Image (cartoon, rainbow, N blue to C red; front, side, top):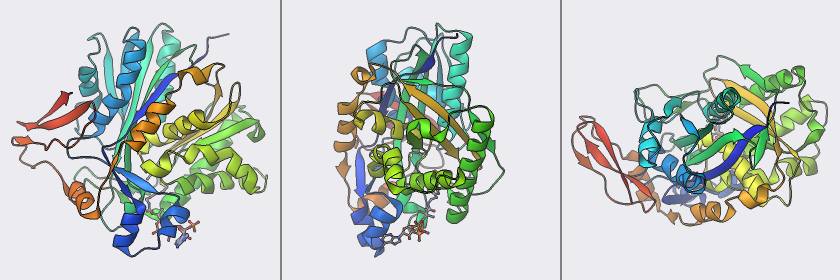
Length: 389
Ligand code: CAA
């Protein structure tokens, strides 16, 4: 009879700018139907020169600290695959910007897009050990592919912050988990590159294999039956991938593919990701936010989570939505984070894509473009300087 542990609060932030896929399609001479229908993306969040994983992560977490205070938070886990430093955790900058107490442990985790789920599961382990503590999980990424590559249309950026603790107000995370690892080169980013390398078709195949593998382990561990779930939150590198994955799972389980059922299982979960783009570690939790914010009433219902990270690691697990959860949602703030973005033209988007700090690490002031609560002011002696507004 151990107490329930799970997601007590969830908040996300995204970028200052947005590039509509109509603009990309016009530039590329691509039929926009390929983007809107083929991959299921309508626009992508684009970071200003003074935004990064830290400014987004702090902006996502600040409303959580505002609502709950920092009492009981003894750990901050920052998940990312677009890290800004090889040694120092981006979480320390967030810890500082939010004024969290020094009696905190802070660490950064990496395993491609799976890192956010690793953070959530490790947080649950820490709370199980000491049920009085809460863990702040931040999953933040800027997804960058080469210009004019097939991956370009799947870029995006966002951060999700979650407060993990006992008696959660939103979602109880259940045992068991189904886990899966395979050594594949479907998507990776060597240390000397800013943009990821990807074998597009290989990555889709690797994702589907991981769905099968993690589901198999989940059922062997005594998990729920497929029919018990009200909805499924998949990692969404592009929202059509969730549909491919869910059809694959239904087929694999001998259910056949009933398109009404697929739409019912996934429909609401793609509404944020299809206008934000791939936010890597945050993506599966943006799917959860979209589901909770828009569904009529999910009280007591089970939600399935499929978290995939290239390379590859996947985990299938379930959560139960807690009675009264709707009073704790941040639906309005989430809509505002999406709607406040300013559209950029193609030339501006390309310039932002090419933007990087001078490799000599010398003094550099970043143009003040963003209007969010935190900004990256520049670089001084190889040190990143952040400011709170
Ligand atoms: N109207 C409607 N649909 C159209 C169309 C049109 N005019 N033109 C094409 N389409 C459809 C195609 O039929 C195809 O649909 P299906 O997949 O159902 O067959 C879809 O649009 C995409 O077309 P292509 O396969 O030709 O597209 P592409 O090869 O140019 O690129 C991609 C697609 C491989 C996903 C590419 O965007 C990419 O490399 N993305 C990055 C990698 C990625 O996201 N992989 C996902 C799994 S890995 C992962 O999940 C980790 C992660 O976050 C990266």
